[in-house]
Amino acid sequence: MLRRAYFFLTVATLFWGGNTVVGKLAVGHVSPMVLNFSRWTIALLIISAISVPQLKKDWPKLRSNWLLMLAFGAIGYTAFNGALYTALKYTSAVNGAIAQGGIPVLIFILNFLLFRIPVSFVQIVGFAISFIGVAMTVSRGDINVLLSLSLNFGDALLLVAVVAYAVYTIALRWRPAIHWKSMMAGSALGASISAIPLVVWEEASGHMILPDLIGWGIIAYAALLPSLISQVFYIMGVEDIGANRAGLFINLVPVFGTLLSLSLLGEALQPLHLIALALVLGGIAIAERGKPKPAT
Image (tube, rainbow, N blue to C red; front, top):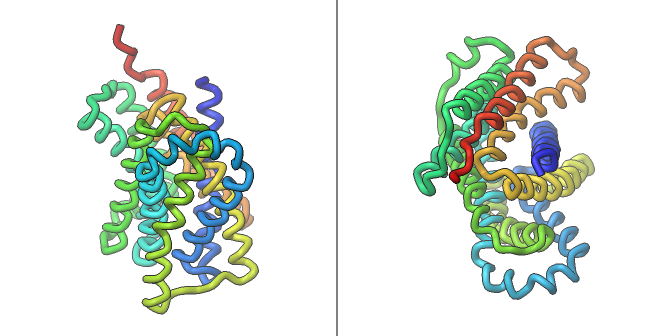
């Protein structure tokens, strides 16, 4: 189960890291809210098409938990992505990456405050080491980059995004006992419906950009991998090892994003990137070894 969870969570964060890259490439080819709505609508159509027998089987539980399913999609998918995409119009990518590194610690805090889920000192040390790796990645090892960060409206939106995904992660504890296909279909439906008002707002504000050929390619990637595969794998990872431990893997997102950016842009891999990756992975490993022992 542990190996399966580690695989699921690593692949999920790899595709999310790629989503950061295509998000940058989307500028001028498709506007953020159109991208968000399109990716979840396509993901919904795909998962529904391959899940008809399972949806019929799980329909009684889906119907009795319909509000929860819609909330999963609205909070974890649309609120997070909508706030993140909009925030990056006002703030730097460095701020965005640092903010996402705060999701795991917020999960720890909320789980302790709400459910008294224990956190060990070793886990805290592991988180700190992992976060240092995130900071090294996004600052490229220059402390002055971190010291010169300024806060603005975009950073407030980043806080909304971080809270949304942390709440979504810990709320998965109430996930109904249904197949992952049904879970994904219900959440994707919630994401699609809740994204409609944002598209309307974007069009009314004059910022809508309908996708061109490159834009459709970006939408296809976002729908298939970050939206569909990553979310399913993340749900399974949380189910296997819990929200606290699964959430720590989110620190891999900016590292993978940086490494993929280097690959696609043809830039040289620096020792700093390898050190940062080692710190993130090492921090996760330390936190895993230091997880509180179950009560007997």
